[in-house]
Image (cartoon, rainbow, N blue to C red):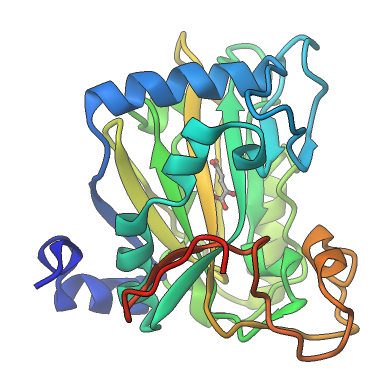
Length: 283
Ligand SMILES: O=C(O)CCC(=O)C(=O)O
């Protein structure tokens, strides 16, 4: 029996399939977390251990942190964060939840949500991840959200709308929207469904998973310390490029030949896990 079979039971897979999310186990030790937080802070400060820039960052290094910092593909810049992002246990759990043989990285997202007592600027607007990823099909992708500190409602933990992965694609996704109430109203109107949320409360080192069509977002951080996390956007092996969708401008499309049906594969989409055991990060 593989280790992940002990931490994700069939009942958990059923919960994920029914609700579009699952609160997973604690994966990382306090010692690992200390190291991850140090390297997370280095990347936020623009200190890139590998000498390579991340793919993108929402605010330049050195600017005052008065809004959420979002850095994509931080693992290019830091080998310690790369170990977290390519964690095979997370990959194995994701494969089991999604019912697939192998899991690759789509891209990572380093998040630093500063304390925001006087403004809403730390919120993450309601969205479905696949709204931004329609170029990758089928829509069976998922996300692993790793807490580097304890997260709860006080510091703006992620909230999901259970079951919303069955509502189909909504047009109103907006990660950077700050008025959550207005966005909720608009999604409720277009979907015809009432919005109920569940909080993803996690101790440091634990991971939650959500389906790429699950609506999620988060409120501002009302605590005194930053909310620190690493987000692993994951790709079932065999996911292919669909040409001509509204997401054709996604950065990952530029890493392919451009042919309709190209597999998202190769070194830019490293494996976290494959059930045949022949996992090769740079395959
Ligand atoms: O961390 C948050 O509040 C939102 C993260 C998110 O959008 C995601 O994990 O896909």
